[in-house]
Length: 178
Image 1 (cartoon, rainbow, N blue to C red):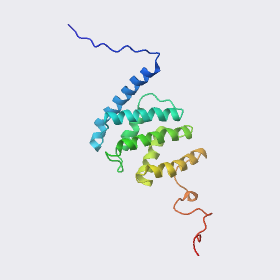
Image 2 (image 1 turned 45 degrees about the vertical axis):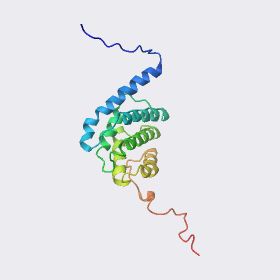
Image 3 (image 1 turned 120 degrees about the horizontal axis):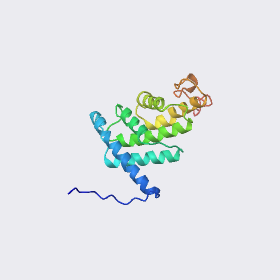
Image 4 (image 1 turned 120 degrees about the vertical axis):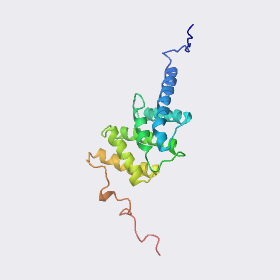
């Protein structure tokens, strides 16, 4: 005699139940990526995956965006698991921050930059300009990127007037000298 599993009754008009099912499904899809990222030494726990889904959902809501599936989450995981500045202890936190940054930039840029171009930019900033500092990336590089996108510039690299290594002209170099 075959055994049947009885599924809980689901009220499809109850949005909360659907969100829970979707969140569980997304978490499982994220956990499946551990097979790929384990070769780089990174594994997300069930709790990490659930938090990543929460961050995704909150960031989508905060930035008035809609996304089906884990497309961007998977791309961020795959790309940044190769980073020389990510380690197992900061892996989940870094992914959550990157997800927030990604959706923020997509919204602020009004989708003028493709997902893949933005991911390439974020990776380049993280690896080569900010040396793993999310604070530096979000405080400087992202603002420059958005300024360039809003000006419809073709390049997203610093120009001479964006040199953050020097003091702004309005600072008196002799200030504090007596």
